Length: 280
Image 1 (tube, rainbow, N blue to C red):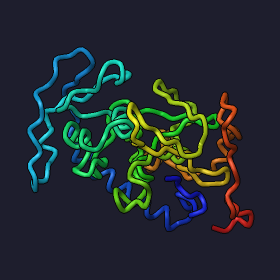
Image 2 (cartoon, one colour; image 1 turned 90 degrees about the vertical axis):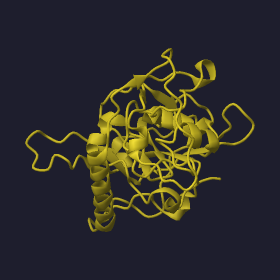
Image 3 (cartoon, one colour; image 1 turned 180 degrees about the horizontal axis):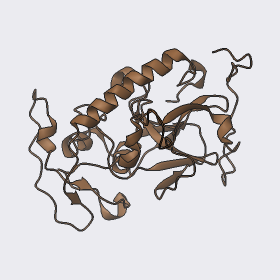
């Protein structure tokens, strides 16, 4: 399934969307206030933690159920070294990999601190640990799950802007979707974990088997508004407002994904933005 770019922009440069985003940021702030940061860690080579109890049908899990689960530290190739054991909490980088390569049953039964019974990211989950960045058109952006949850990692959750659309099944985008080119990190920040796009059209990724498990796509056109995080100046009156809606073209993207002969070009979307009349 391809996300239809003709259905309109993901973010609208309007006061209405800004107000909606501010409401979603209130949700982020509340989730962070209730968040229990892991106090222990698990990495490759450590003894496995105790297995999680079986999920009980009809019972709604709470944060207390995984309060003592360790957070996975570090990232490696799961096809070579295996996946983290059940009963851990995943960093955003591992959530990204799990969405790409693991079937729903494994996500649900092994990593239910991060995924609900439908295999989707929990709406009240707070970003943690490392983030996997995705490079395309000379820029790096965060993966955005289903167009609503930004896998920004623990460091960038300070911006309180990881929920950017209607959560879960109400998002209107494919269940198995990781969307790129929507939310960007602080300018000139450095990143260790980066995957590179060959093309921005839909990529059907079958992981290690024959079944298509994920649809990935760069979804922003050259004249679309995108979200960029930035560092508030120390004397700012509201330090928590550390994002802006920016026209993608102002970020000087490259027309093609570098190094790939089959890359498709960034295009202009019908309907100009910013409005040359200066009216919103």
